[in-house]
Image (cartoon, rainbow, N blue to C red; front, side, top):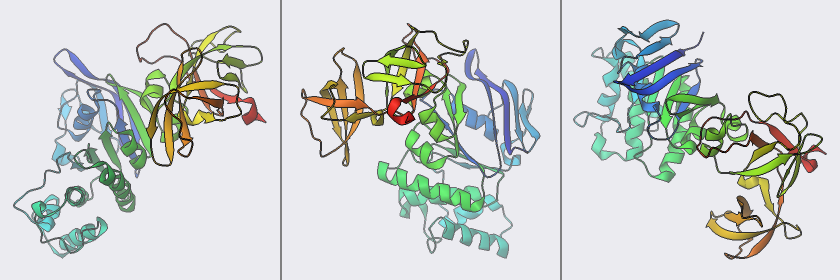
Length: 375
């Protein structure tokens, strides 16, 4: 049985629809993430799961029990849910140990004291129990907040933008550490963030939200390499959609070369194949385009972003189409310089081309392989 189930969950504020028919389930011991831009409904959905808000439609189940549906909402304190807030919400007048123990209630026997000490050791704060929150760094305060949420052994942990107040380096390190802690405790958790690096570091599965709906619920690898629609393709990672045209033999022609599919072209949700001449847009990631001095395809360097081991180049093709290429940093080219490039894509996604410019769910993705990858 799933630890958490959402079936057609809807939330409105007056006439404003914020969450629009969300469905997903989360198995015990898994870590999930709701990822999306500001205003997409992810924090509202988390508050509905916690019981802070009553829902307008659908139902939420914990261990098979309905905890939320219109006209019925079990109080947050009765849901056995732990919450880690964006601002930590620690009690400034209590010590670290007292903050962690707060979730255990007033019954502070030897077992409770042992649980607190074990958690402090687990989160790397052994010997820090007598300090007050203001004596700790931001990362240490976040660990205290996590330990407090874990103390009563809740059935589900909810984390609302837990690393947003930390600097980038600490955020990346702590996201990995928090995942390890949750896995060690065997906890089931859902995190909300707009930062895909945090989501990829933390989550087993991720739900991409846009305009109140889950656009794709999947593992990180599939979100990057098999996006379900144009919004996911644009939101996850970096890349560009390059125009192409379907040829013979499951091939598609584009300015950078010809891609060949192992299966018939399926470029939208309604047809099983695309005929010759069908126009498509092909998603190319920066690692799909390789710098090659021997290539006859030339591109002009428009922009460059130094990243240490690599440089991310924005390149303009002869047609004016712009593409991205991730190149080892010892290939340091000047702006305006022409460089040789070639296509090295063994996992490319194509969508049926439309005239619409908005990022809305569109075509079903198709996996392509070039001739070199197939051999």
